[in-house]
Length: 178
Image 1 (tube, one colour):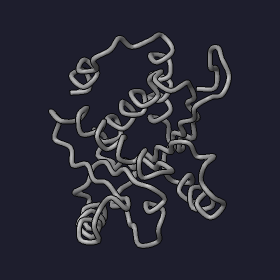
Image 2: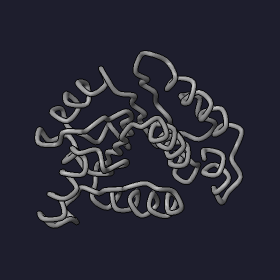
Image 3: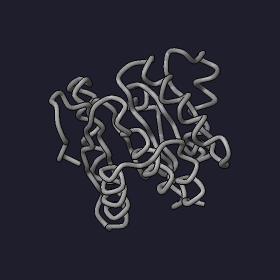
């Protein structure tokens, strides 16, 4: 099924993406939690690399959470994830202010019961009332934009969960920090 997912990508995968994907998959097989930074310019495929890591985690029976700093970015990720995972049996939930209280309640129940495979949200995902059934991978987009309290909660999660941080770099040229 992983091959089907990879083959469904509508663009050619770059050499750097191939290397980053291989590194992530190898790290996710290790007994200690991964803590990796993936950086690159907007439009250079960080999200696709992250989705492949997410796919691997879900195939291993784990939940995946994607944390983004703004509701607009959460919504963009949600729409991309729905498109990319449309042909696969994946329950994708979104937690942000774009959801009503009733919708959030349903999503929170799905997260706790394990029905939700992939959850994308704002700092709301870090709230104490969010209890993941079996979180295996946390993808953090633009972590530097979160506050101290949120970073403390992220530190707690890093002890037991694979973490992939995505960052847009601010320089020209090849990024070597994956």
